Image 1 (cartoon, one colour):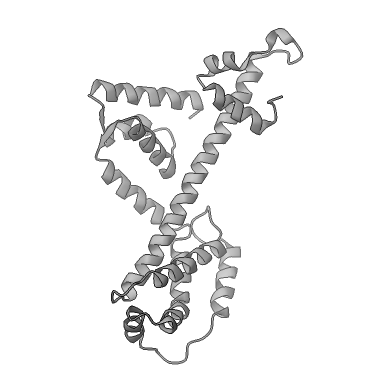
Image 2: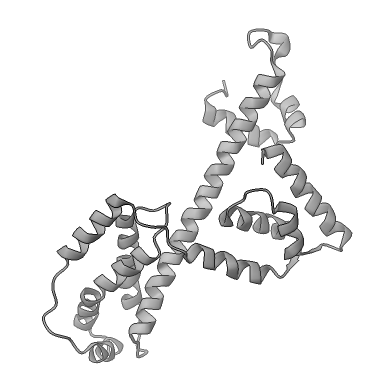
Length: 246
């Protein structure tokens, strides 16, 4: 779907919302954008935009749950990532015997710094496995493991005096990884939107100007804003990125 078609569908769904007193059903949004080829992060972007316009969306929570499930579906590791993961796991210290982890969690609740350090060491392998299970194409496995270890350390640091357990710790690591993946998908959506804006502007300028050297064919920013249905500042920002703002 090109930018103009997307904008038309966005206007269409907003008009539908206005005719329904400022509300939409999630199903109506899916029907409107069903053939748009949007990925989960782009669909989330549409929902955020509509709600930012004061439109309430019935059934959005169900869609959100589905989106989160899709996000949790791991992308397979590449051969390079598999090699890195094996090397990383082999490089971790081997534990001698089985340490009483419940006792360590009890000491952690008592404020033991030593218990926090031991738990961090004991759960590094579990953190790496979670990183591999939640692998995403947007993040290299080495960075995922680093984020998993960071979530592990932050969880132990903020455990407080409440008695924690393994289930809690793994959930905290998973939560940290989900947030990182979500941020990366949102950034990709923003980057893709920016590329689309640049391509849209460059394509329009080519179509509107048969001869770039003919001053009569030059359009002002204000004229382009009207023709392309873009804000003047949006065009200025895009021109800065393309180096054509002189």
